[in-house]
Length: 107
Image 1 (cartoon, rainbow, N blue to C red):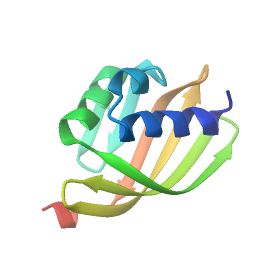
Image 2: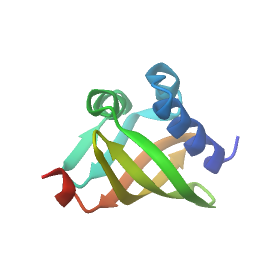
Image 3: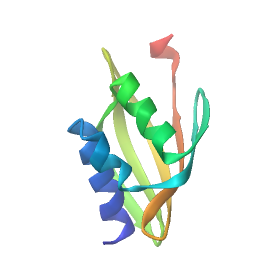
Image 4: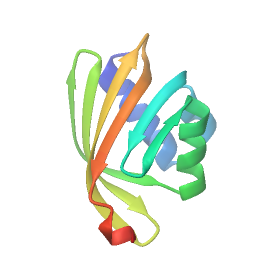
């Protein structure tokens, strides 16, 4: 499976509330760097998504080797916030994710 499909599958699993499936697409030592801080560990990242009930409305996905960029609306409660995620894969799983978005609507 190519990097783009891995990321798409992970996002679809999250959107479907299937966090067990989502965990299959991230490494155990995955690093997440976000607007509000960072987490270490794939389980910590997926637990955060589950706790916050985050979903994605994907607009565009670009891939370059093991790097995948996703442009999306981040759906968090009543908020739909436009953002971007840069996913880096190692051995076919997401090992690093950096996201950017304007968090002001959530404050």
